[in-house]
Structures are given as structure tokens and as C-alpha cells.
Length: 207
Image: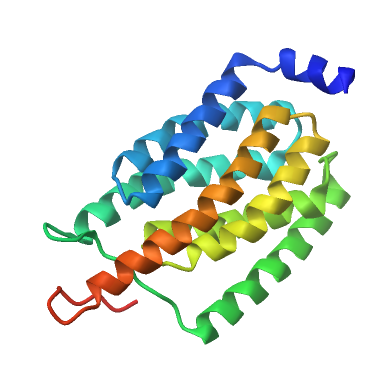
């Protein structure tokens, strides 16, 4: 317990700032606010450096993707909204989810093997799984897909363990907090989507 407290006290202010911005991103995403993408962009820029220093190479690559997705998500959410109901919510079919899950697993295995063979990466397979899962799920957020919240439950749980094992305690705690917000976000979006689909509202754009 004393060692854990010492590690927390030694946490970089940059990690604290990145974690706070990451938390703000998720809260704004639940509310379908465009501010979420600005918070995501700033948090990602900080984490890009932090993960590189921890030899979490796939997490560093993931941050580059997040920077691009923050811009794309902002533009997509601005386009896919109405004055009455804000950002419109979409959904995927079961077939799309099965294909996506298979691709994430396959990509994680191949990526993990390459890291083992050619780098000194920490936790190569778990790192790869979190990276590819997060790529897919962030794309789902940008595309306004309600199932993104269910995906985040899986990947945030694994990410929390990964970051804890690498001594990034504030970030690990952040992802544990994420889990509670993610569950709340799913039910909020499900309620809002039901309202959007009532006959008196503008129809949701097809996925």
C-alpha cells in the first residue's frame, strides 16, 4: 500500500492533465457535445509522449490515430446533427459486429507476434489488443454508433490492467472510472436514440 501511494505521489503532472482531459472527453461524449473532440485531441497529444517513454509502442501509434480521429469525429458530428435532437445516433447489424470482432482478434495476434519478434515492447499481445480494439471503437464513436459503449466496456477493462501493470496508476484509475461512465453513456444514448426514432422526429441516417 505504501509503495502504491509513493507511485501515485510520483505521478507526472502531464499524466494527471492527460487523464483529466480524457475524462472530460468521455463526459462530453455521453452528452453528444462537440467539445469532446477538443478534449480528446489535447489528451492524446500528451499520451503520445508518455506511452513512447514507457515502451508501449502500440499505444503510442494509437495516439497518432486518435489525433486524426479527433478531427474526423468533430467534422462527422457537426454534419450528423439536427437543431432539434443534436447528434443523431446510428447502429450496426449483428453481422457487422461479428466481422469487426474477428478482425480485432486477428490483427491483435499478428501485431503481438511482430512486437515479440522485433521489439522490446511491454505486454505485446495485450498492448496490441487494446490498440486495435480502441481504433475500432473510436471509429464507432466518430460514426455515432450506439454499440461503441459496449465495446468500450471490454477494451477499457483490459486497458486498465495494462496501464496498472506498467506503473501508470492515474491512467489505470481513469479507465476504471471510465467503466462507470461508459455504462451510463450506453443507457443515455439508448434513451436518446429511442426519442430520435419516434414518428415525430427526423429519421436516423442509415449506418
